[in-house]
Image 1 (cartoon, rainbow, N blue to C red):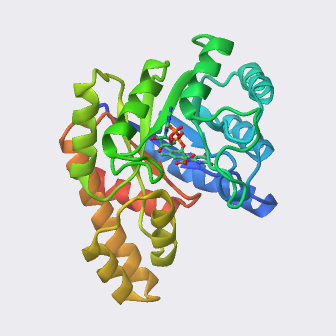
Image 2: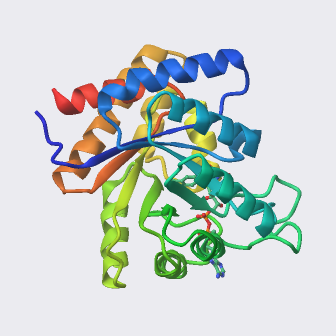
Length: 282
Ligand code: FAD
């Protein structure tokens, strides 16, 4: 069954740490070219990786022919550093940025030094002030609420502020309950938001990692999924097969309901994303 109807696919990678990782990333990205992604994105600062790692990975993937979007987080960087980086990306021909607040490493407090922007909305404003309309700006959205928000309505207001500051599109935190996404989109549209809100899709491949990530980012792993995965223990093949079934079904529901696209968190691994794609398109 082919249910894709002009819906845009994008893929997210993180900067590899060494030469072997770089080689694997290029192989993974080229394997996933079969999904015909509109663009690929590269995370920033996540998991201890550096800004230089993002820049270098953008160069590598652009060299492989991908339209590549760096993630850029404002926390911990001075506005001047951010402007310099934007100039560098512009010189490289980059046209899309995923603009985020980011998180301070634990123990450093939330706000970092005085000379830093506090929220992603400030970064969106800085990009527009500095670079006009050169960059297409994506921002983050949280159907199940950002874990530091004081409530869903407040969080939605902060999301709408990012849109009004000039975001062109949004990518959501991952979720396994499609209703959370539809409810968020409905509420955003009622506030006048018209930009595409693309669901972020997390393949399930590793139980412990999924639980750890989800606790950090506030994504809910439904009880029935947790129980099934816990029971599978170290049986990686069963986890993989179950994960593909669950996430394919989620994608099917989303696509049938005319979502504007899907953004896959590939974790630099082609297998799971490719298996979901094959299940969706055959
Ligand atoms: P914001 O939109 O600034 O929101 C952060 C919190 O502050 C929310 O709780 C919001 O409600 C609140 N808030 C916003 N404005 C105000 C205000 N004016 N007053 C009071 N409260 C306010 N992290 C990385 O480190 N690197 C990455 O590459 C990366 N990529 C990501 C990609 C996607 C698609 C997503 C969904 C997340 C990504 N993250 C990444 C994680 C992200 O950096 C964290 O979730 C971070 O905690 C919040 O970033 P944000 O851009 O959503 O922040």
